[in-house]
Picture 1 (cartoon, rainbow, N blue to C red):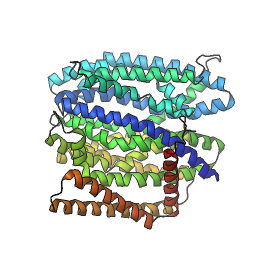
Picture 2: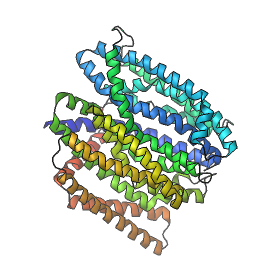
Picture 3: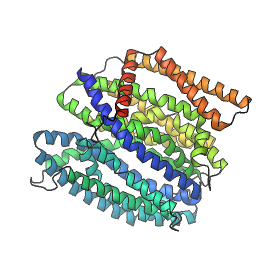
Picture 4: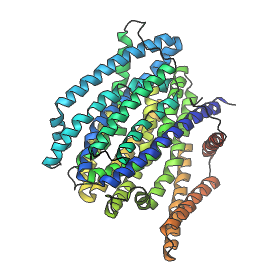
Length: 525
């Protein structure tokens, strides 16, 4: 077996383990959203919660992604020399990050009214008062979740993917339990659900690491230079996280100027659009990170080029048909998942239209996860910070423009446009960093993917129209139309496939076959 194929096999195995755990978590997340929609619909109080949660959630995501991306390659480098050295430096870093997040939590708690005044500027006075109370509780997530960032980094570096991706399930299970048994907490049921569930998640990861023989303790003295190295890598990595995560907070903040329910509409649409990304794309990006770091350390540039090329094709192969399905059946999907209780038909229609606008940028949103992984492994992160800052300003500018014409849908469309512009720029930057001289073969594959997407959309529209003419129920026509459209996509891909696309399909089908036979271990090896 050749080196690229062997590497692809290892990444494939790790990806499937992550996908299984993430799928379980996202099925629970869908259940949580269904119960939330039933109880709160797109109410003003839910808008307040979504905005209040977005702030600490974004802070944790920014630091988690940046620190994790900087920590994993360095931890692997230390561990290659000595497991004792790696665990000792990691423990020192745990102490530092815990103190950092404790300080941030205290600062944000004190300045909560000012934070709400800034991010909730479009809210009514009573909404702002509710937001201050909620925010002061949710700010605790910065400490609770932040304390577990290094746990996640160590699990990631050691490729202990099962523990890493089982842990988040505690959050959704807790919220579902509280929603289902209606504790009389009203909107605060979501607040306490996140606080209790996140605590359980962090505790689980700490216990899992001990069981996997991580040596808590500092037998080696504090090494200022090594801590400095991590932060010098992590701070620029905030740029990648700004692109992937902060724009949702920006969207929520600007949506406070729109009618009540707009923030909740964005949140529902984003969560549905985010599902395939978290289940498949984020799984791949997290799986390949330690492998890419090892390839960089070994100086195998050819392998890095192959991983980048096949990852781009894999992203297109999966996200382009998902976008087509969202365009064709978004309203049916939203009605199926959310229309019940307080979530009425008008809310479903607005959410589905917003979902379509988000889905148009699905490929580019997916690419941001992969892009940061490569730049972090290459330890070339300064450009990420610059581009992350540019993406925020660009998103704000396009939000102002598009929301004026399209309302809440315009905010989602602005995010997709921002992701597209930034991602295209990054693809060419990474091409240069990896020494790739020609992307023409990759572009040739994408032409075929777009041809297949056009055939898929055409088939879907024709079958939907035919079923409507003969008055077939949507419960029957939608699955049949989706199946026909997907089959058309696969047939066109098969007929016009390239060698690179054929390789991706072969790897994917091999992993699916191995999954059915139960040949994956829980650590992804």
